[in-house]
Length: 243
Image (cartoon, rainbow, N blue to C red; front, side):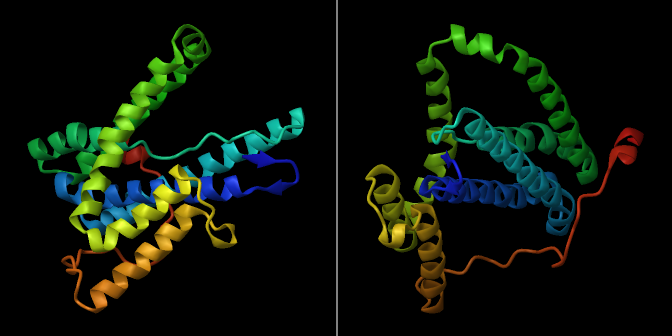
C-alpha cells in the first residue's frame, strides 16, 4: 500500500508478487507460441516479448502514479495501486483457440500472430466500452459473485498447474512453496523484513542450480533462443492492414 512520503513493506511484497506473475506469463508466451503457432523462439523474443514488456511497464507506472496521486489528494496511507499485467486465462485462450487454429489451417506463423493482434485489439475496444458500466455492475452485483469467479479462475488455471509442478519436483519446489505459505498465508516475518516472494525466488533459483550441479535435477533440453540484445517493439500496422 502507498504511504505518504515513503514506500512500505507492502509495496515491496506486492512488487515481487506482481513481478513473478508477469515473468511467468512471459515464459508461457515463450513456451506456447513456438509449440502451438509455429513461431521461432527468436521471433517471440524480438517481436512479441518487447511489446508485452513495455506495455506491462507503462501500465504499472500509470496505476502506481494514479494511486500515489489519490493518496496525496485524500491524505491516506492505505491506497493500493491496481496491479497490471497479462491475464493468464486470456493468454491461453488467445494462443490455443485463436492463433493455433489459424496456424493449423494456413501453416503461416505470421498470420497467426496477426490474428492474435486483431483479437487483442477487438478485446480492448470491448473492454473500453464496457468500462462505462463498471460502476453500475459493482453496485448491483454481490461482491461474492464477482470475487468467486476470479478465485475459481485463479485456483484452476493459475495455481493448480504450478502446484502440480512443485510436487513433481519436490526437492526443488517444496522449499520455495513453504516460504510462500509462511510469508503470505502464515504472516510470518522473514529476517530483515525481506519480502517472501523475493526470498522464494532467490532460494528457488539457487537451489535449482545447486541440484543441477550435483546431477540431482535433470537438465531440460536446450531451447532455441533469440539473439541477446536490445529489441524495441516495432510498429506492424502497415503490414497488418495489408494482410
